[in-house]
Image (cartoon, rainbow, N blue to C red; front, side):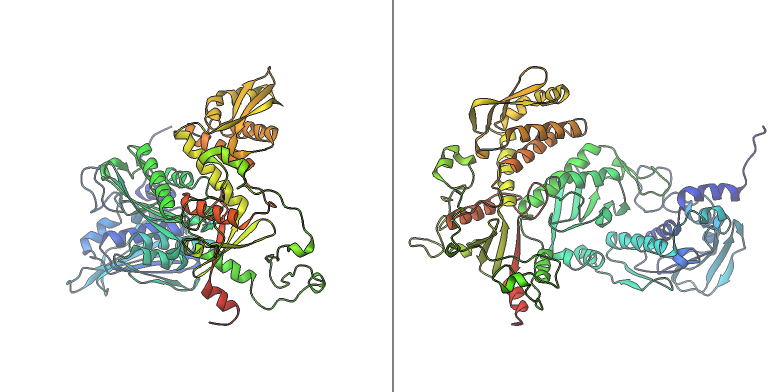
Length: 616
């Protein structure tokens, strides 16, 4: 078989298979060119999901006639010279325009500012027409029609027009977040117009344009640096989450990327605070020396490789966790909106309500809170709370006690000798417990509803987490060791982590080839289902034994143990105990979410309550 040189058109079509995968890929390349040209206004128009028409017009520096001739030739660029180690522009490969011209009908009209006339060049399926004079505004307008007409097989792999149009919208949004000083307008016959005015240096205002105004109220600013790698941006509250990862944006030196390592770091940072199947909202901006990152990994330039990936991951995880520890305990504003929907007027009582039972809202999918049983009903099912004297011997790691430090914290509202009104605290003063699970608390400007099991689960977990790097947690010995039968391989896995489990107050020993003897359990957990805990720990270790680092494994163990030993739903509490729980929540980092990521409390402002009754 004879080797021969491929034609220039075929070479460009092969390159187009990597660079231009779909209309959104073409839009990304053209918008990058406009940004590199210094544009402050970029207008994008589409038709047929970008397959029929894709037009990008900018007010950038523009090009001369001779520049147009080179622009549609492969590997011709003005953005780099002799090295790939100092790339400071979005584009640099010089492949986008010739690739598009080889599979579509491409026209480029451009005029430099101050020039008397513009110029235009047309490429159709790889065939180049001579440059000709043309009327043009300062800047450049690139028009792509009939994308992939020269390679019809590619059309079969495209999605519907609606899906392709949505992909272009996503590209524009990512570019807009990265460059808030540029005005973007996206319009066309296949969409409603999206206009994003320039916000200058106010990145949060631009992010709010893209992600919604509610992000502004539910975001925490990031500002961290480690070894000349800087991380900025915003991390959403753990309670402000979405059903997919489409609301996670990452930028490296201003370049939008979809890097798996960065997304993995975001997941790690929100571990133990995010419900299963839900994803955090985050916008991260990494800035570092271009020599420390390789952006030439893939022709689409969406993947990057860091010289020190461990450093970058540690920076992201550490910065987000520190931000959540600092400000992440407040409830998201969306929680109040859900409560308003649940309590909206216009309900009618069911038959049960007319006979003295609970009311239910027929027009709402949410279940309302019912009044607790009063003492007049003869309800004597009172179980001791977690502030009893028997718990005091557990020391500072005990379940929350009524004697919480702080003025007035352990006293009922209005009690004699109270040095401060409890409503002055962030989580206010406990007023009631409903359904033996939810604590209703009054604050200065509203009310808070707390899930007692979820809240105490977080408190216990944080105490166990401290024990991982400090002293051993207090334990209580079992009078008769609990023998738990397990498969031999599960016993082997548990014994590998026996030392770490002992640090958490769980002392285990091997009891034959297929059993584990439990001699001590964490004192803070009190009475518990020991066999259930051991079996669940064995299952978890089997699942992630090769996937997580040591610290991650131990935190998973601590979370599982905390869940087994927390205050259960259905336990009735006294006012002093409820207030003690609220005070400890205020002092504990991450108390806004339980170990599974569910919110531990929701807050309703007085203004929202007044709206329910038409008072505002």
